Length: 435
Image (tube, rainbow, N blue to C red; front, side):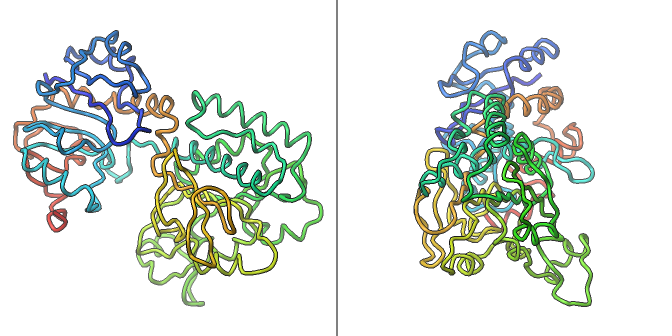
C-alpha cells in the first residue's frame, strides 16, 4: 500500500484548492488503510487542523510518500526522485514554460499522471474544474460590468456584485445575484444600458456554470435570429436581461456558398469555414467566451472587428468581454495577456491597439483570469474531491515500480500516465520534440 502525499500549492498566492477534502480523505484512509502525509499550508481552504483530524500527518518532507498529488504544477526544486505524481502539469501541448519541469521529472525517474488526460473510452474528460470556472467567470464578468458602469457615471445595482474571491462560497454569490435580480425586476435597468443583451459562446461545462449564475437574474433567452432584430423592437422589457447562446454554426460559416454547415465537417476540415461571429457584436452588451478554441479554427472576435465596432461616433453597447477560455491572442484576439484575481481586467483600446489595466478608457473591458476556479476554492475542491476519491483506491494500491505495460490501473488512469519511470509513455512520445 502506497503512502499518499499531498503537496502545499505554490503556483501562486491565489491557489487555495485541494485535491481531496479532509472529509473524503478520512473515509478513504479508514476504508483502505493507507497513510497520508500533507505539507502544512496557511493558504489552503481547509486548514491543517482539519487534515490532522482526518488522520493525516503534517510534514514538510514528503520523501516517504510513494504517490504525491496536488492541483497545479509543482516547482522543479520540489520534485523528488522515483516518485509518482498526479496534478495538472500543463504539458500535453508541449507548453514551453513547463518543458523544463517535464524533463526534470524524467531525469528523476518519476511517473507523471495528469488530471487533464483522465478520460473515458470516448476521450471525454472525467475530472475537471470547468463548471466552476464558468461560475466564477460569470461573477467576475458581472463585477467588471458594474465597475465599468461606475466609471461611465451610470448608477446601477450591478455595483453590488463583488469579485468571486470576495464571497465566502458560491452560495453567498448566488444570494447576491438573486438580490440583484429582484432589484432589476422591481426597478428595471438604467436606460443607458437597456436592452441588456448577454452573449455566451459555447454550451459545455464552462457555459453551464456561466448560465447557472446568469439564470438567477430575470433572463429571457433569445435565438440568434431574434438577436439581429431585437434592437428594432420597441416592446423590449427593461426589467429583463436577454441571453443568447452561440453554437459553432453561429460562429462560423462555410467559405463556399454551396456548402451547408456540418459540425463534424467543421471539426475535421476547419479550413473550409470562415469566421462569422462578428456580425453579432454590435447587438451585445456583454460577451462571455466559454468555448474551446484552437489555432486551426477561425477567431471569434478579431482586433480588426473591434476596431470597426468602435470606429463610429456613437459608443457601442459592448462594454465587457469575459474571456473565460483565456487563450492569449486566441479566440478573442484582443486578449493580450492572462490576468489574475489581484488585477483581473484591462481595457483594449481598438484604435491604438494597446491595453490598459483597469476599466477606464475607450474600448471593451476584458476579463481574462486564467485560474478562475481558484476564486471559489471551497466549492471547486468539494466537487473535485468527490470525483477524485473514486480513483484513490487504485492509485494507493498500484505498484508503480512495474513496467508501464504491467502496472495495474483502470483505463482512465492509464491514459493519464504521461511519463513512467523517467520515460515518455507511447501515447506521449510526441512530446520529445518539445523537450
